[in-house]
Length: 413
Image 1 (cartoon, helix red, strand yellow):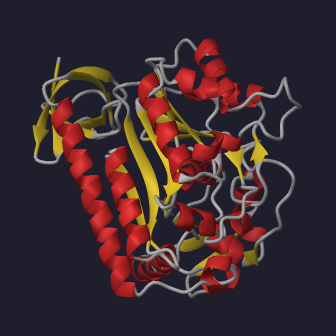
Image 2: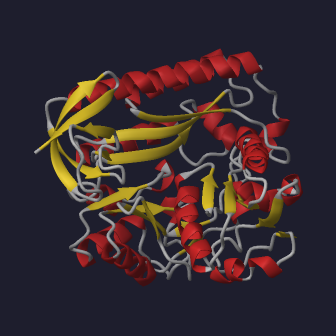
Image 3: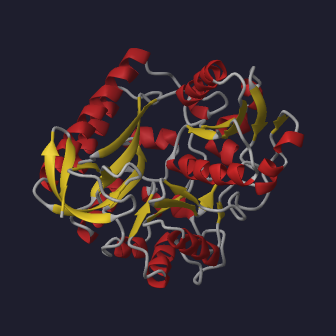
């Protein structure tokens, strides 16, 4: 049996789906593919622990390691049981998996000029939704981040190719398309010249227009500095899911400047207001780093206050983890107990916002996309719903929602 183990972002999840397709097409058997993440040191440690566990549990299996951590520091994964370490430039190339047995044990290639998924098939997550990678890499240099080292410069998948991949996924049975990328809102910046150049909103508009069979379109994380007017307009289309995740990272202007982010708190608040005016029922989410270097009590209090003001039911909190070689690693550090305590307080705010969203949805009817298990699904606001009876996977069913603690149940129509 071949399996994938994924760490990190939604883009990694999307790529693992594609890797699974490629590995199966190559006839690989008894192989575990570990797709690593480098966003924090903790993510790397989790991957290393998983590899050691897999070695104990499946001693006869081939273990292949890939992803951002493998790209940045492949020698860390030269471990017993690991037969191959592959970089991001190769992991979505069909030829890599077809010729795996003949490759050297550690073969991390430098980045080329193309998008990694140019020739790769889209993956179907549980055969209900398809992750479509539309962009790869990042041109920005946030002081805490090593992802540009792992993913390279920003590259966009051309418009017609995105449409073709989405159409193919719908034809294969996907009911929901999820657009993914490292820096999603930078899509199109390297395609054509102004004023003809499309931005992310233009791409979304084209997908909605050309794909009438597309029932649900979902976006991954958006940079507040790059949200374009057409994207805001597209949020008013019922087929675009009312779930927007913002790459905020902090809620204090001094800390945002030291992170080298391109937005300030005022812009984040304006963008949230624009989104809510376009889609009143939207559920907002955000990424936040707790305990960034130099963050004092006043800066944290500002972040906490702005998290409350934004009302974020989908809150991803990352305790700061120093990455060697980044500017932030040389800044004065916050004490570990303070980082832990601040992360907990931010998560409490997220949980409270989530409880408010659950209470608001209770008693309403929502379209639920049924997962592979047949007994659960996701409503448009990206909350999991436990259904009252099994339904065919991939079905979009109207269900009356009810609160069950901090989660939702649904009675299918």
